[in-house]
Length: 153
Image (cartoon, rainbow, N blue to C red; front, side, top):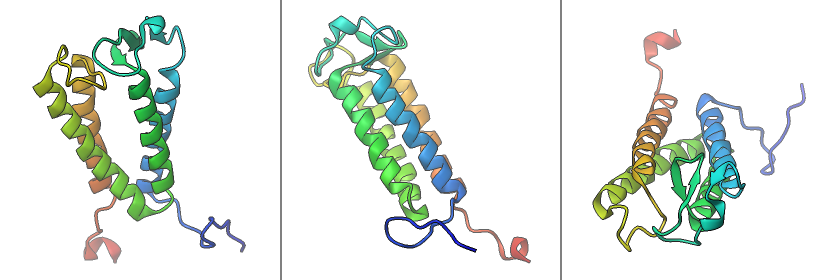
């Protein structure tokens, strides 16, 4: 039976962790694109390149800027590349989740009106980052647990 090969010449099975990383990555790419679409992003004309003065909001909720949208796009593209292997997918989910937990803490510490809030982040972003961080780490860990010897019999 013939199998499709990847660029490396070897077929890699689509494991649950790869599927999860692929799904998460696609969502990040879509969010990055949607951030550049007027109507889906409210106050689109008030979007700044970076900084807390950007008044654009994705879905009318999450404060975004050009930089914020680019970060989502790049994060998603990195995830797509890493989702090609189970090890890469796990690293993306756990490492990316850790990055989002750091962003959550950063958002809580700097506050919305600080010049250090360069991404920009608002309260909705902060809590979404917490959920993303915990969810991505959970997926990375739970989908790569080793089955017990009893389960293998």
